[in-house]
Image 1 (cartoon, rainbow, N blue to C red):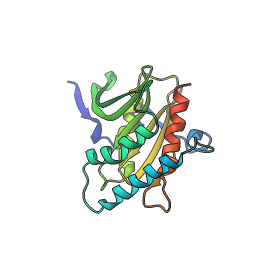
Image 2: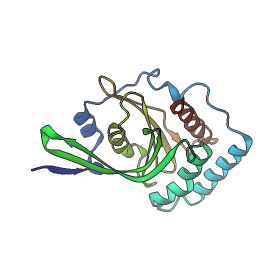
Image 3: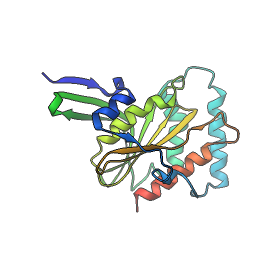
Image 4: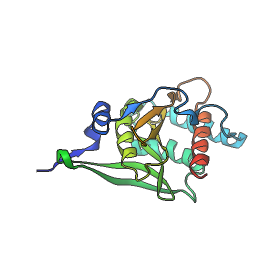
Length: 208
């Protein structure tokens, strides 16, 4: 009898074990988020300052993940140019992964998926503000592993409104993933400048 498993019920250790997935902590593995990033204009900085101010003004209250998507994620994707052609956004995309040798099927839904030429460019996994953003990592990696793109890196973006984390997955040979540093709205200045720069960088990489 086939056992159905919900993606949201798997922890990071279980995802790594099922896919023989290893974390690569070498800085050169996930080099795309580092170094010189695309420039952020003065107008974009004004937008990002307003996004931070608006979000932190009601951050003391419980926020549903849909509010996080609307108030933080949507404007970031728009400013990064990921909500226009040649990219195609999809929401709540169902995925299913079968493990025939173990009679298991994992099912889940990707919060936001940015597609380019049938390649999964960026998988976005949002969590409620009260949850640590790292709790989105198992689902993000699981969804990235289900991508039909196994020849080029797939990039993920996890957030909970105040924290932001980027993920890179390479599936050739032995699957490996790497993480960016953690960005946060509670840090001095505005980390959204760098977050937007990284999103623009990943956009440029996947359309080459």
